[in-house]
Image (cartoon, rainbow, N blue to C red):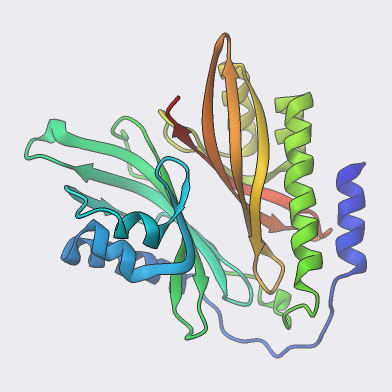
Length: 287
């Protein structure tokens, strides 16, 4: 019921302003990620991150901290880091996008020194028309047995529109959606995910390779037997109101073990103007 009401609010406030279509391609955010990788290879991890950081960009070390604040506070981050975007989306207006994929970090000379995992990066277009890194985090897991499948999807350009004259209204709706999902988690983990997940959803949990698809995610959650309580910290969305992100804190309980996490969620809007969760990633906070 709560979710239906949110969809009705979105529909009632949706702007149908005419707007000539501008060419937007998912390759632009993929290129930003690949250029970032090359920059880190050439200049090192610290200078690479500082070069692409959005003014409000954050990383989780382990809690949310501004990229510029964290990397300006350290002399150097040792080791080599490389990654490949395999999953990417961009908003119809082209101002917000994300990529995700496998990474390898090596701080030593031997194969045993390699650390494997998957990253998630959110990118935002700045006033100069350049993508800047808004959010970056990742999970660690064993070396993958097979290469990840590429999933780059072009945006629906019919969703292009002028920026809302009341941007806070959209932000409030997105905040309410994230909080509604968090409340649903406190009642039933499986029911909450079943209600909010996109059919194409990806789930990133520390220690495991990414899980794709609603059925596989629900099976994983059921097998793990975990319960989740979470609180929203911040949200943001594209000007075309078709792609968004939220992040916050979570406590996950499995049996008698409770651990703290940060979460980031990527949301996409469907034909009924309901926000569906396209991606969720948890990063561990050491107790």
